[in-house]
Length: 167
Image 1 (tube, rainbow, N blue to C red):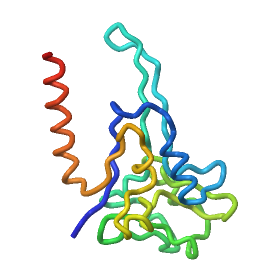
Image 2 (cartoon, helix red, strand yellow):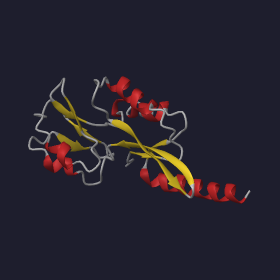
Image 3 (cartoon, rainbow, N blue to C red):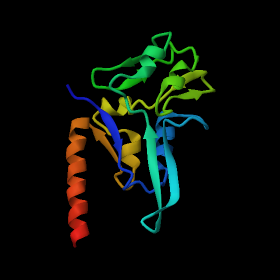
Image 4 (cartoon, helix red, strand yellow):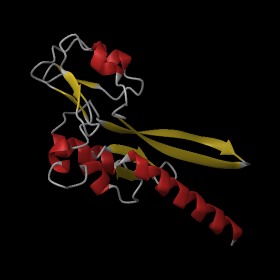
């Protein structure tokens, strides 16, 4: 069975916020809530130089999501492919899932009165398309797919960085 996840490479993220905009447009999210957000870290001094990083934060679609057990209405479920979804018809807006999310990825939609979060654009994925945030990232900082394949991407990147540093 295929398992899906999203990984952000902070070395490639330039803080353009294209992922945030693409997500909001794709999922018709109102002003306020963000299913993916880019946090700015810095500037701070690293090795005598000023550095700034941008860190995309989104639902991790956890292996054992604490939000599922926290929901008194059983409105949150995990599909066999790893995608965690909130059923807005069952959600009563109690925000208990928001309180237990370790990443702060679950947001309250005041217009609908329910909790919402990244769905990995399940409506796109089932059609063989990439999530909108991944599709619109100009630097390729967002990886989507089977998390077991991320290890290969990270190792490949590490080898490339080592080789470039020796040139």
